[in-house]
Image (cartoon, rainbow, N blue to C red):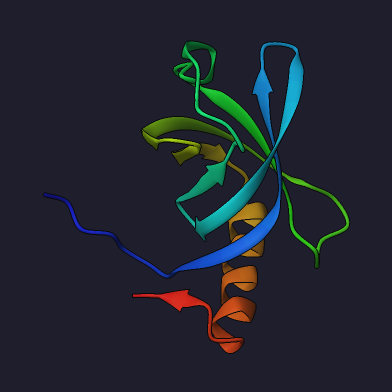
Length: 110
């Protein structure tokens, strides 16, 4: 089994996931620099299990959304985990800064 690397944190921010040409609103509930867990607010459908999904992560401290291409790793009820496969280095740094802020508030996970 491969272990996790890096910091991850429980968080709450708006995520928009592509569903074909439409962007579906979701909530980001757990984040690391390598992936995100989103809450779709409903059970997932076959349409939610595309090979690659475009995500827009809207963090409160950022004026523009962070865009990433991700692949689904697992699904449990309304939760779906994604691993980032394409994200700009500057955006990955923005995620690390967000995680640092969450850790200062006591929201980091082991």
